Length: 214
Image 1 (cartoon, rainbow, N blue to C red):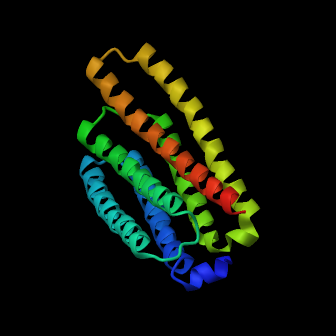
Image 2 (cartoon, rainbow, N blue to C red):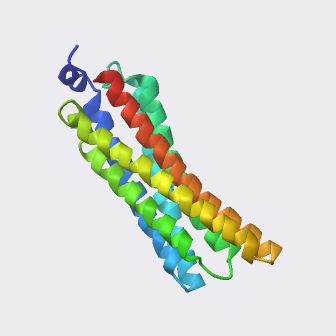
């Protein structure tokens, strides 16, 4: 049965807009994260963190819609399990961005390291690529190779962030003598790095969906 028939029967025409909506929320959250990283005022950081929480709540609603529609849909454009996995991983990415922002506010580290900002900006790029992918996801038959290439770029970012993370951690354990500050910094950068791992998982999931149906 063709992809177009799937769509007419309640598949892609429902799911693709929801994936677009979720990626837009991820992009908004990523931008807020970098703002929090760069902001010097603690009160402003808290306000930005509250905005982040609202974005995260909106993401929960979208994820619930995806699961609810998936449960009821008679026809779907991709494997049901893959759709559920993609929605779940997108929600996890948003959660990890939110978690990073919470740590920055709760821990109140003595300073923000430039490596954290660098990783934050890579998360923004992950989000931008995800927006680009989901904007064309409904044209996967025609743009499959382009979408796979974008997924590959997300994977490259994860590898670059691994290098930033490893270099930072090596320096941290050599230079930081305050145990409390060391723990704060380690947990913050770990959370940021974890977010890019989840972004890679999203890219891998989308690429697998394209390969299976292509």
